[in-house]
Length: 423
Image 1 (spheres, rainbow, N blue to C red):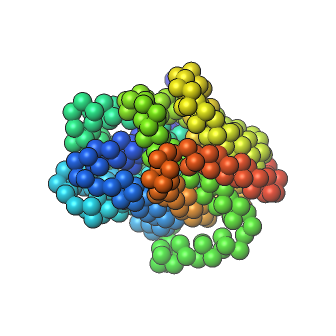
Image 2 (tube, rainbow, N blue to C red; image 1 turned 90 degrees about the horizontal axis):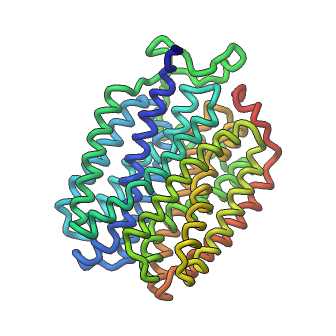
Image 3 (cartoon, rainbow, N blue to C red; image 1 turned 90 degrees about the vertical axis):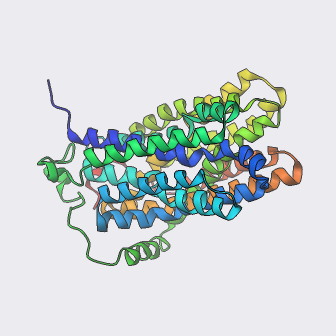
């Protein structure tokens, strides 16, 4: 029997670490109403705290990439998961709105940054040459799957017991994950006398090295941004990723449950729909990674954004008719496309900037993604207060997605075969 390559062990541990971080960050949608009721905080204020978290986890991406290069993958993973665990523990004793902003805005925002931004790129670049797109697809799928898969359980704990039980569950998961990272994560293939999966003499020169850069990591981050802003490709990808964040994590991840409840749909059923989307996201994003190894990534992005936009415009129609069938159809199509945009975006970033710089450049694109997410999180709360409905927010997001599909088609033709030998 052929021995399992250790690259897959790294991928499995990273997969579950991303799922746990995703569960923690996305659980905010379940806690909006309980926090509103128990602490008498306004919905815009609570939305603001969660928007800060989305903003910081996005903008921490390029810095996390630099910290991994400077201080090591395992150490940064451990510190990030520990910060999440500490933030969850402090939630039990918070009693002021500024504490919510500090804990769920700053601590959980920064703590989830590595896992939900550049970890997939770092693992794929270090441990994979063959199946690199597939590895990115699997790890990216974990990002959204983690954000969705446990929501029905958390919603049930909130509804039938207390939000504290839900916090306790995800705190236990974060502690378990700390132990798994400590035991199984290795920095580089050579640390265990092996090579990246599929490494050949032709691709050897393009592989990142394990020599730690001696420069200031903050300078590395800003230098990469200066390089990016001179590139048309960077702006087109960053602009489309802004729309991606606005239409997924920021709007659907935060306000979908509340939108469903405004039409009389129970919280647990609404959370179950999100979890159902997570199942199809795992399929869709993994398939997207496989496709990104084989087809022009521009056209993949064009299709993904266009279909996402149409599904968001369809959602208000499904809710107004109160049809479970229509809502399930929405969940399937939207779920397949939830974060399917990430593997082709990473592929195009690697093509434009080379494998050695791709993680940091992608980190900056994730920052734009999370600015979009923060805008939708806070803006969704404002539009709800203004119109007593989320419909305008979801329709606007759908229109922006169609616009995003036009951004990506302006990129130059992409040949996936370039990626394994890009420097």
